[in-house]
Amino acid sequence: MKRQRLIEQTARGLEEDSYISVTADSVHACFDILASKPGRKFAIKIVHNIDSVSKTEATRLNKLASFLDSCPLILGVRSNNECLKKKVTYSRFEINCVSVSSFDTAFDDMHTYIASKSVGVKVRISCSKLRSTRKMNGFTLNSLAAKAGIAASTLYKHEHSDLYASLGTVRALERILGKDIRSEDRQVIGKKSIYSGYLGKTDLSVVELGGSPFNKLAKSKNYYELCNETDSRTAKKKAVLLERVRDAFPNNYPFFLGSSKLGKIGTIPVLTARELSSAKTEDELLELVYS
Image (tube, rainbow, N blue to C red):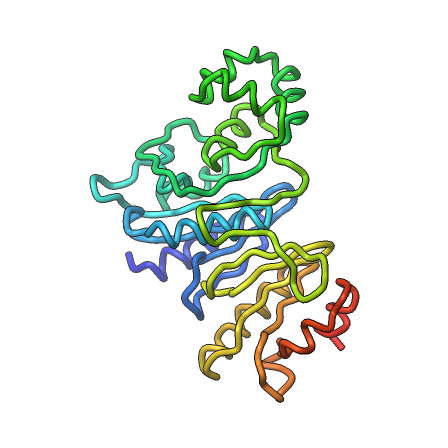
């Protein structure tokens, strides 16, 4: 089955399961579908062979999902070694991978994990959340460490200071405890390119995605998707995707950064670097985006 048909099949299934979703079929992107319903959000990549997903693609998908407080997921047909089995969760660079044919159960807590690799992305754990959630679930320090596959001494350190841990470790602990244990600042770091910064002079947190398809994501009270203005054909395709994201999900305000005097590409505004740097607050940024 061609990849486009797999994407369409998955989108239909999500719609039947009451998800609001957006597909990125008009541009090259680190995701194919963004899906959301109350209590659940996913950034989904769909491929024939899950081993074809590169480390760069996985890193971008992880960045996007973590920044949007959603779960990354890869749906596929096979790996290099075998056809993917139903109700088995595989792993590619610490992202859960499941068979397209069983995607309807992919959003449950599945129990079998195969072929895990590290992608180098780290998340800060809240020591107070971890400690209280462990006790509430009746785990001792040693029993939780053993179940999560980490050293008890490492778990002890995380319970006494807000330290960073690998994304895989955090997800393993959250699966076991059934609760979010991440620090409230939601800052995510990686080996090189993921960071928390500022957009203009505002206090928005920012993450770099490198144009796949967004160049930057920013958030505070709202979410902002920023694309650099490129050639007109690519920009128009990105504008279509940005419109879909804006219309499907609340509190999303996409825009282009460029030198265009057109003011908009499609219905998406274009801001110059000078205009963007003049914004000192999020309210001023919103006024620029939708003035």
